Length: 87
Image 1: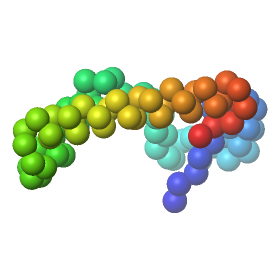
Image 2 (image 1 turned 90 degrees about the vertical axis):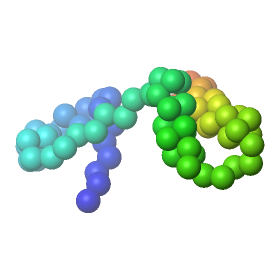
Image 3 (image 1 turned 180 degrees about the vertical axis):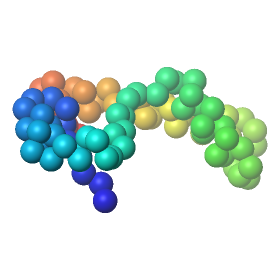
């Protein structure tokens, strides 16, 4: 089962006071941004054994993956700034 709470505001504090097992008996994953180099290494690892044409094409695809993820993160921050909505 997966429960998602925002750590901002009173919601998580109120729930953790009512139900202490939410904090004491669970695993909390804090999702944070990855550095560009780490994303590139993950792309290299997962695409390393695939046949994607030339080595140059494979390098370009591996470069695009962290680039696109970083751009999506920047755009979602912009949406949050303007609309106060998480994406």
